[in-house]
Length: 431
Image (cartoon, rainbow, N blue to C red; front, top):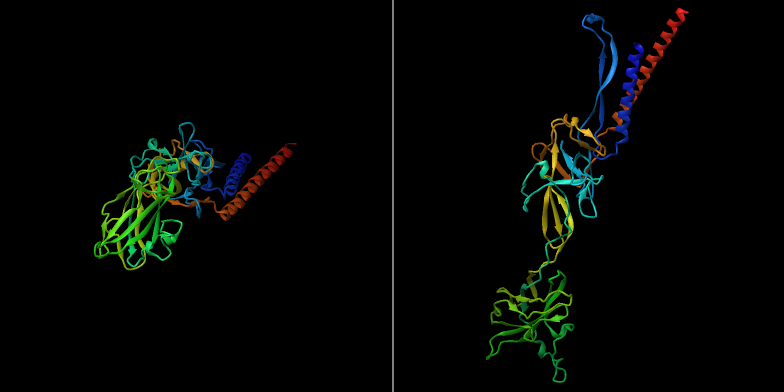
């Protein structure tokens, strides 16, 4: 009897050492949760046995339970690296159609060539569907969708109008009256020669394919008020790329300012004839609107506002994840898209989950069904983007436990050795 009792202790100590060794081996595994062996004593008795003479029959491993305490976090440079501050789990799905659902604490996610967000095992991170402003539409497990980053945002839209507000200097010289221009050398506008214009400004416009084009407006002062003409007159000549914009073959926007420096003409957007850019895109028709705030006053040439209404198809630049799991994608055209909310799950009995490796688990009857929710609600935990949860294994504690398990193993082995010696002595007595 003593042999089998000691052997059960030997087996139990061996199991504990194997469990501790596994903890130590995974001290660097992200999201790993240490395990602990729970022992129970074995009693062999009968209904008529004297309760004061019961001798135990050894020990048995009742359970190897996981300890889901929070592990330490470390910062990361990737927004798709996520740690959970709380008891929840990320939801990932694998297999054709995402039929196999796993729950994980390892929040190191990457992107596949087809832009799906996946964990280290290639399982798709799941999102709750939301509206465009981030409002949740459903929090059920069946409603989750794989997280996928869009490659670009929106269709390109050709520019149709340039809006600007400027101050043209009141003391600007009349270019054509400069001494360098003579009847033999008359004034000719040349945008490559700064001597042929007073000022210029530029803005980027877009064609129908989303190609950026440089639009430049050059200002040339033509005249000052006289008795017969009480206006300051300018001409604004517009170029897109290397093409000058015209109206019926006539270039430029005639501009008039009164003696107070207020723009009196044009007071509405000046529309140029359509032209075809060199990029191979469709024809463009641009208007230039100086508004009512463009003036001619003292001081240097300045531009208070310049904008246009075209957009390019935005390229993905960055991804962000809020503490509540809201995932956004930002694009080069300034657009921001809401992709959904990271789906999180919790369990009534997380120790009942079945380990599948790589710090992930699946549901069992002991764990109960997942309790789905968003970050920051119902105690499920919040998401720390740009962080990774490390293993919750304390190496010092595990080494101490390993020494204790080793001592238990040695003690049980000694008990077996002693029982064997007693058996040999009894056998020798019979001889």
